[in-house]
Length: 223
Image 1 (cartoon, rainbow, N blue to C red):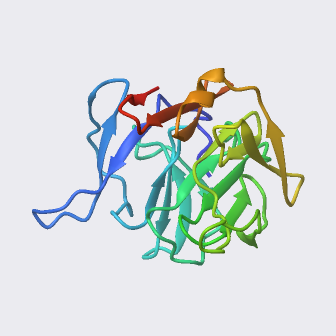
Image 2: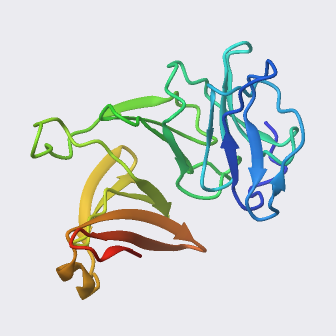
């Protein structure tokens, strides 16, 4: 297990790249505003999940290995138990904290984009990946179960499905998944809009709720 680094530079974008016979994603550094050169063994368009913390989760079927990869250094990786399921590339992947490989405790979380299921493991733990089917409510219109989307990690917990009223779901591993909710105060501007799309963003240890509000009466879109 390579433990040379417990943190990497600011996150990169892993973009699907097509054409020219390439099956590898194009990596782009947001902070440096340039493409990241280099060849990461085992990385393809369909088996990699970037994390907001800067690491990329890679599931290499050829070698039956799963690991966290530093996109800036092909030799810097943290080995994980092999993920047995072939999951969609649209899954959200997050870390509960800094992946200090020797101390353990950091949760690697995969959230299915449509199904109400999550997969998780702990760095430095001998346990295999675990799947958890959750039930956080029913959608009013089609009576289908509510999936987790969007989601962000902050201070060891995961926060998801924030709404314009200030209700935010909370997922904590203690050590098994435990779901709860919190309510935060929101700006009074929401009293005068027709709908809003809410995003959760972590920055420097703080959780932020970013809202794009819509006014159908001609007011347009505001942040």
